[in-house]
Amino acid sequence: MTLAPHRHQTDDLAECGWRTEEIVQPDGSTAFEMIPLTEEEFLHPEEGYHLPNSTFHDRIAGDIKDILTRRYLNDPTTAVFGDLIIRWEIANFKDHCPDTCVVFNVQEKDRVRTEFLVNSEGTRPCLVVEVVSPRYRKADREIKVRQYARAGVQEYIIFDRRRVRNQVLDEVLGYRLIDNVYVPITPDDEGRILCETVGLLVGLHDGEVVVVDAQTQERLLRASELEQWAIHAQQQAAQAQQRATQAEEEKSQAEQRASEAEQRAAQLAELLRSQGIDPIEFKVNSED
Image 1 (cartoon, helix red, strand yellow):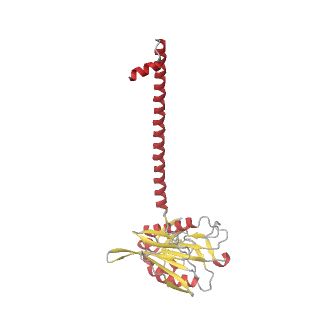
Image 2 (spheres, helix red, strand yellow):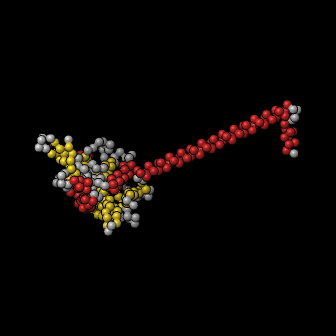
């Protein structure tokens, strides 16, 4: 099998994403050609489509999914999915594949799924999170706003990074479904969006996801931060163990010196007695 980029669109593959198409060669052999995605295919991907991404996209999408997954780790009825095709099963309405979504009232949360059938599952995503793909910014920021509202998603959060006047601008946008219409969520003073569905404040700081529990104000750590914390805790534990070992060694050495001193004192007393000298009187006289 041969896999080759589309002959006219090689430079667009990373920016557009791609799908593969089977091509029969003149000699009868089969090749699979990489075809850039159209905007429609980006909006409604199927299994096997390769969506465009970037290091920013991967980091943000990965961090938000990881944080949400850990938040609901012990909740058997709340699932967090990433890059899973959602079959809305709505007439004349196409499917989506959000970067991350949260679904309440799920049965068999850990069952392997290649797609999520809304009617069959009896529930739908309550929160969808998308990280904007620059080539399809309008799709993420405008078209999907209308489509996720129609799909009945209670909240839609968008992370975006773009360049304005040679400066990098990070944005977090949010929409909440009210009377079947999305209403923009006003950010707080720190630019964070309140997600009522999951009880979290989400934002960006220096290009990194910031997630805070809206009730406790506790910040939920990213996986990289947890790893750093674990390493630091291990280092502290190792240092504490080293100090304890050193203290134990010093204690043992002190006890050994005390034992040796007692032995020498006993030997001296025995020597004095052998010479007819009372060790106690000898000690008193020595002190005088």
